[in-house]
Image 1 (cartoon, one colour):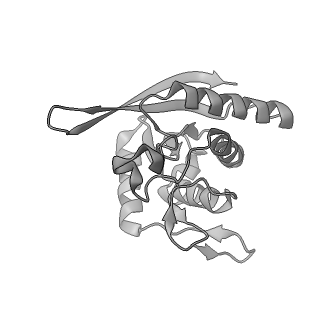
Image 2 (cartoon, rainbow, N blue to C red):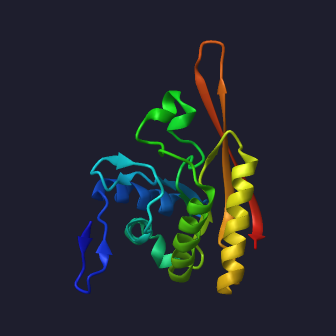
Image 3 (cartoon, one colour):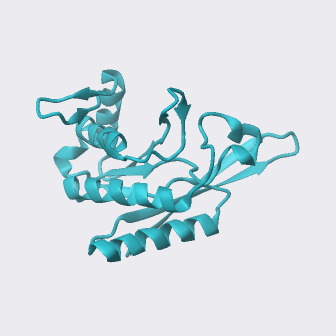
Length: 195
């Protein structure tokens, strides 16, 4: 991550990747492109982690950089859906594949909700037509989803935020087959506005 003339954080994505995304945008017409913006970052110990960061500034810069460099900023974000985080309801205590750096040390729905709220508020102010999705929740964890939505709603009320911040709720049901093969199905549930 670099700094601009005014000290703002600037993220540069690979030119080939952004070129492909721009071609998808041009060819897809009215379709939406859904991009998972994973929360993996370098922690205080210098190692990769998926723990929700205390400060969303770098993550917001990452999302803004993607919208700008992909060309969706020309349309105020229209046609783009960013999923903010991935499987934030899973952590190392769940064992197995969840022991990797792709997963957090612990799960904290309220911390993720605050992170989502700050990120969504900033992104929606810059790109009003950008659509946002809650983290792809593993195993359709309705308790986690409920706690996150309740916290976001509380923050909206406390801060007088009127616009909807959640456009899509994404969840994944992971099925383990007879041969221990995992199949992931992602279902997008859309609503006009979750207040």
